[in-house]
Length: 368
Ligand code: SF4
Image (cartoon, rainbow, N blue to C red):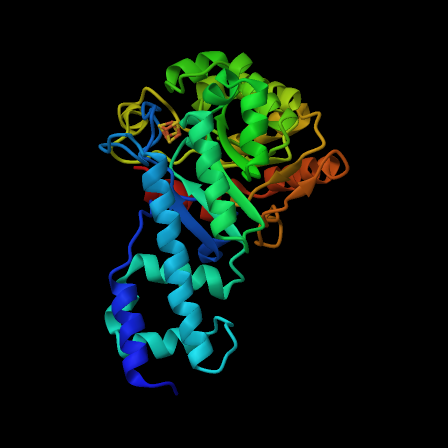
């Protein structure tokens, strides 16, 4: 092992280095393998009635200088960790042994979120980054471009950079602005469509119309982004399930994103929608009714997307008590696998409703 003094110096420097990391990222973005970096903080809209993510936190527009300083800090942490690898004779490779050696010298590093994030990112190959928080494209385009260029130049091991975006903001951006952002190094956008139904969009205060959702999604694709659109089964409850399903299918078909991801509604305590459910203003569907809604939405999809059920709330049971849908991040290839998904839904409907126990349990635990 290398000399202790050398290690102490590295640990001391690592202790002094920190950068901003937010709470949320999509699960498909590589788990702890993704580097998390905050280019803005929280949500500039923050009014959707079902969303608790950034409630009580004010939006912060970060300056390019602050973002660049955070990127430089990530590079400095990377360099310290890599230097320890060389001292251990590991040739710059970031393995478990590097982490063990560092933590043996400074146990508190386990609690240091900057160190832990960069270490996990490096040990997974240092390939992907997710830019937080809720709507990075709200940044003024030239500033976003400057931040992205600095990111790509400073951390050249990155092969994919992704972020959340609101359709409304994408619709407001000029095509050439989006192209500039894409060319500066942002690859993939995760967009919360939730529903394509205008009445429901107004009820849940999404702050966008179906037409704007379509325009935003299409513009992003035309600029070269890979686009994931998230929709929310049961957002309209028993009263509006049909219009929700049909208009969502229409909007998604018009966009034809690369990925369509199902995120069934979970009423979160502290949100206006939770109160709507508690007061009986919104009546949630049963597991079978959610499948009926799904059948109508999927049946209306005319896309060449990947359709994904990559979330625990999509846990309907099949005849053998297993999962009805595959829950991987690549999902079902449409249109080829559309008949298969519709067949799976029919199987789920043929299963006694009480056997969709996992869906019921998750609805019960996380809602009322
Ligand atoms: S735009 Fe997204 S993050 Fe912001 S309140 Fe709505 S759902 Fe939540």
